[in-house]
Length: 513
Image 1 (cartoon, rainbow, N blue to C red):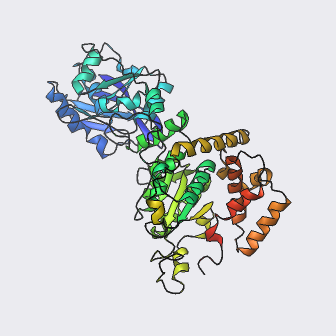
Image 2: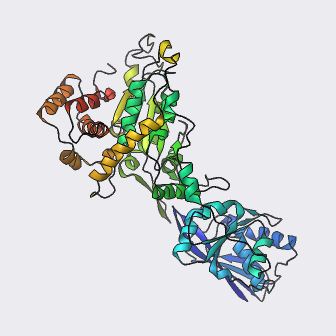
Image 3: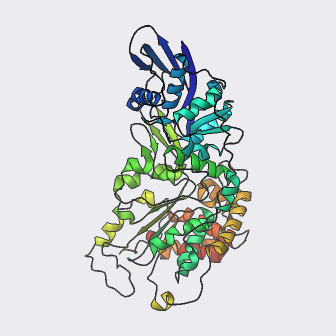
């Protein structure tokens, strides 16, 4: 006899429907075909133990399991449950009232028949609805994630017996309904870190407000203990809230990577990823034998914070250059190629020198001649070229730390950021995949960032007197456009340019001289 059910495989952030066919015939042995990896082939032992636990038998005949299409690599343990259901069907141990062919069936079986959670449920549920399946049968711990998708019956099962009872018609399981949108909108503003808890550093807060308003990349340079990391952690709290499409895309990536956790629903807040400086290039951009998303994709629609930037390996920093420009990363292997989105804001921090006290107002730098420049040279020009704002962070005085005056809250700053982003949305509505000032091409900068004669004079003098490099020109114009947006100004004024110029510290040829 032949039985057929449907499962799914995930490649990149998209799913492909897999047909699971089981045939029992004359002969002996268990055979699995269809380009399955070791975890899939080991399902025989898990399925057999689970069936015996609930009083069913594994057929003692030739049993062939086919996973189609046969040219697609199958990996993981999510095929245990559909193989078990198929095996019972084709051995006449299960007569179905509900047709398993109407459902995508997923789940890893433990030896006692309890279902364990799997990865990548959200893209699978989206694909199931797209291809007209009635519903999806899966472990209870993954049900909330699948329930994000509308018009799809989500059948949550705890054990193999629950799934058998559901298809036999002896157990009624109501489809799970979760008001994910209500949960999404109520938890959007739940940030533990808030700018109102930061005393002093008003100039740094202003720089980070500009960064958030234009989607710019920024680097903070300052001595140890000046508050660089603390300020960076608060950036997500001033970014515009995630839209539903952005939240769905972000959730898909975290689902594929298995980072959502139990009973997870839509990701409601912008991601903040802060990898250690010992990270490998594969862990940062993604990859592996079976490609998985890296930190830059997990930071999609959010912030990637690299603390102590010069301490990262040179090769790790260099692999970021292309994703920073294209806002996606393509990972190619001999048998497959996957693409992950990576539209993130890069926020970096660093000490100005190995000892940390170069340019410190009170402490002396003990680094030898040329050491400061050598330290700064760990960051390549092409990478620095992709960072719009260079912000010098100075220590906070005792008077500022001990002050009881309440600082401006993240919510107040966020309102100005949202207003500036709305202006940019209107400005770029006719441009494809451009929605913030930081994403403008050089041609767009010439068309949009028009400055008057006084502005040109100021910019010329700044480049000559401060020794600014040529690559700073476009960056200054982009940042000044964002400053003008925050000021609700249609034109870039001289004061906007002047403020933008001060955020190019590392471009000054004498900065580390």
